[in-house]
Length: 547
Picture 1 (cartoon, one colour):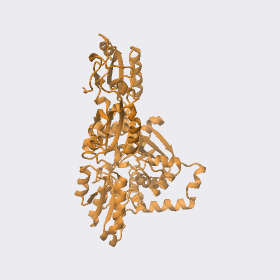
Picture 2 (picture 1 turned 90 degrees about the vertical axis):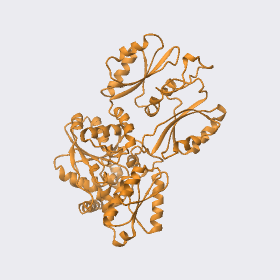
Picture 3 (picture 1 turned 45 degrees about the vertical axis):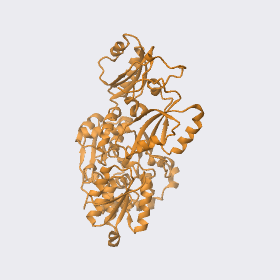
Picture 4 (picture 1 turned 60 degrees about the vertical axis):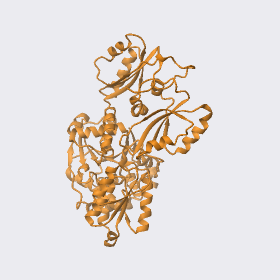
């Protein structure tokens, strides 16, 4: 977890407007929000206490339940407010938007209510469930491109060709004002003191609207944005004092996977947002589980970001006895993701630690290892004979917190077992825990990489087919986690004379990748020992076949 402070030092004055103009802008947004037309289609959502999570945090955490809107997201507020202000001529011509999900549903619903045509351009990688949801609300779906940027560009092209009105997902004053009605409701629903409000950031429309209202009426309340560590466009922009365009973004929290924040939203966040906190995938999964335990509702990853940020803030500040509000901004969860979320939630809650423990390969060693574990609850245990001298055990252990994991590692070391803590290693969490089984005596010249590629039918076979037939594939693990990006680990046998060609292939592939050849978990469980000059005996190696 990390944070970017609000840039309010005097040196930043040249990047901001003068005080008089700032006051006019504030008044303008206050009026825009107070007169926003959102309640034709939106409802005033509850502000509810999360009792179990509040007790664990030692603070009162209230959830603003935007997941309870009819489209299971806040997005219809801004979209409808923008469309409700269009002229009859514009409505007669129709509207267009680019979106992979929540904004699309908001535009489709609003257009249906206003009796206008809505074309929604979505990436070809969009899950069918989201396409169906937009069509069910009367939207005309056009699939174009593999990324949001490609869909957005095509939508702007259609806007010009067909004379449609583009409904921006975040960078429009009317959209911002519509989202700002959430801040208006919070102030009305909770007039008592509030320490901080936590809001997920994608393009910045939601937090800009909430912050513009709250800071005008309750400037003592801290406004804290929350972004994924791999989609932190606003955090980087605030840190550098100008909008930053990310070369790529992680798509687990696809509702906030924005490469570049808006012009107006950036300006508002510079003025009103106190800081931005970054959280990881595991923290987000843990937050989804936390909300489920308190409400029996399942938020989507972007919808749970604010809760993850609130938890991180409480831990960082050692905060207690305060009132915190987190905007639960969406619940359009792909069902296929639930398996992944459940697996990673334990890690995000710091309730599971993963270790690689090396023990002597001799009678009694495994029993001694079990004695060292004591009455600890195991979540995973993988072992297979692989060497005449040493055995490597892959073990998951239930822990109380992260400090407990360090104590567990120290206990293993104290028993004389070399121990490697793999709890935060992505290769282990995504792939190796499903592959542990031993080394292959045939894996000479093996190079191992992790890749991400756009997820769509046939994408895996297309990816594997892009490899040169001269390179033998020696290892593959892929698992569909219901995300927009597929994740795969691949081992290829690349002779030394082909290394230059391999590097050229990586440079032109166009996918994100990670070199995992020096990863200690790979070396322990799957790699061919570098000191072996001949093939090992049958008793000292095993083909990778899982457990």
